[in-house]
Image 1 (spheres, rainbow, N blue to C red):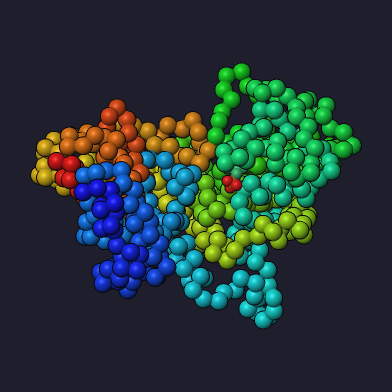
Image 2 (cartoon, protein in one colour):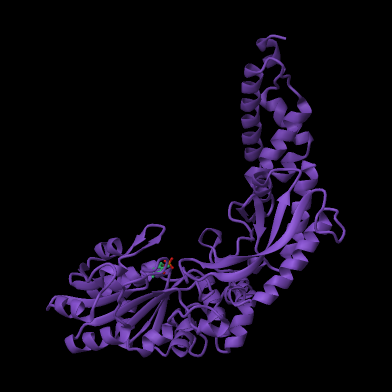
Length: 473
Ligand SMILES: *Cc1c(COP(=O)(O)O)cnc(C)c1O
């Protein structure tokens, strides 16, 4: 059959649309979307008929392709992912997962009118700041607090409100890039503050700050180095010393604490990370942090500090531009409330629960998970099946999100060495499936860390692995 004859087999758009309608697609999808899919598959089929002499038009396969394309087009773009990487605050996978209670509050406030800016007592207009301010003050010991869209916004606003047109002193060791193009020097320039760098990359002394103070100095800024560490011959000046220096010269001290740790993580075997409350106790005038890193809440930028400083921030025009919406406020309030009792915070807030999960608990879950995968793959209670070798091994989990970058959190992973498909193919099929399962590859094996999996997700993942390996066999 020559090319022209093969092309004549192609249906007209209207006919193809009628076939799609007969197949029930118009009942499920908007007409415009079905039309778009039909056109795309027609184009694609036409190219194939031209390129490949042996190809013929197949009406059934055509409709199948239209249906597949429609399924992809109507699938939500932002959707659930199963995180088997062991990276708890995974930046690409949405950082912190909200607690059940926080998620419920979000749903409730989303579905109804709310007290967002309404004072029930007086019946008058209220302030959206009230929902979290008292909680933040209680948890950090600060005089006043507010929350904005994220920590980058908090830092930007603090610099603009307190140091615009003035000098802000910062250590060279702290001119960090956090990722996603947040760089301290860039933020400073945009805020209108003049950056005065002091010290060397590895060492900054108190006298370096002191020598840089002029009548133009508006702020001393201390930035948590977040996702990297300067190790070896190093020196940083602590908040308390900067506060003492600032007080002598009437200069505001602002610390960008970064991760938002509110509890002493050493109690759970994790490395020391100064809490927001410690910076306040050391006398910082202002401290900022993220809401969705180690704090474990929604994306937000938290600012706590002295009353007059927070008042200046609340009155700044940027505060209106960067304010939180009601859904985030609902999630943040409920997350902060959990901290009233530390054991409740650890148990309820997924980020804290995962980070502090004891090694023996992860190991027990890994063993059960491995057995479940082997079982799903037809191996009964044997760990080696025809489809894959499944075992457990020690490995490390990570806090992620630039927090605790040097912390190797001991974990036990499940390792799958597939036989019927390559490990690359297994990883790809799990990732492309619904929901997407994200796992690591190491030494030709697929690694699944139970630390970041919900218990209900383990059977789901086991079934998915078995399905991929079964298809490959
Ligand atoms: C993460 C981080 C930021 C940026 O916070 P976002 O909430 O992502 O905007 C700023 N400073 C430090 C020190 C950080 O660790």
